[in-house]
Length: 74
Length: 244
Image 1 (cartoon, rainbow over the protein chains, first blue to last red):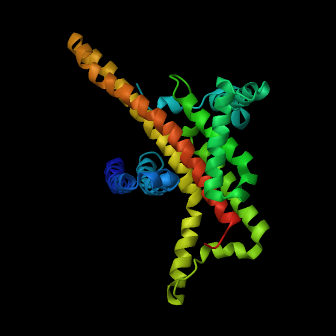
Image 2 (spheres, one colour; image 1 turned 180 degrees about the vertical axis):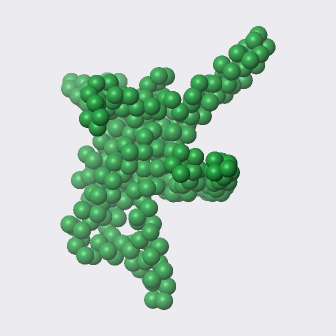
Image 3 (cartoon, chains in turn brown, red; image 1 turned 120 degrees about the vertical axis):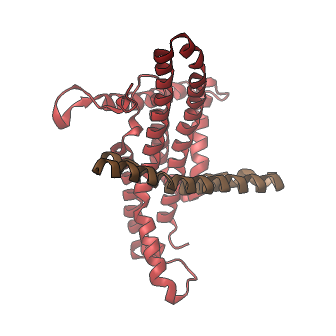
């Protein structure tokens, strides 16, 4: 029974990645929209794009971490 | 067929905590590759660079521009640290893309050690250069007084979660990518074993997917090395210019 709970919990934890997917998609969509409006300013914002992507992605990675912890560490 | 098997650490010689493992072997190979590449590429340097020399200059310029853009000219004193981190993570990731090779960065203890190195550098240099004013990092300017306790608490938590997110991002990306690759490669064998000749025909689908994922993994290998570098620069910038 305990193992069953672990698997259900790990499955539920992966739902958090959906939120990260929305966030990362939003970041790249907004960057592309801005870059098409003003292509000359696009290259200068590339570092910020990657930074925003990394920070947003971290939250999705945390939910993967919870899932892995539930499967292998609990 | 076990997709986790590729991350197994096996001692090559020696025993217990001091064993020389396959992980150590690939770390040594990574460092040797970088050292040999940079020494050989720049040993006979000429004004008009050849292929190898321009590759070395390209990687230098790439990291140097990143450091200057995010941490300013003062950040260039950390260039050796940042360049070593970038090259180590990049080459270790790329070594992992070779079939049957071991991916050093797919183990959290390795990436956590790298992240702690960065965070310790930030804290030590921040206090050494700014003294107690380094703590202004946690107090953003222009915040109403009644919101201050909440904001400071959030800033402290966000600072403390940096080594975790920095290490877990790299580790989890490499781990998840390599497991996905092996799962799709496993589908090829399982289809062929289960359905015979029809299975061989159907196995083209997961094989194509595995090839496409391999391409994506090369992108991820480079992107994660770049992300690790740029976050290092941003954290170092906090130590150099705190309080904004």
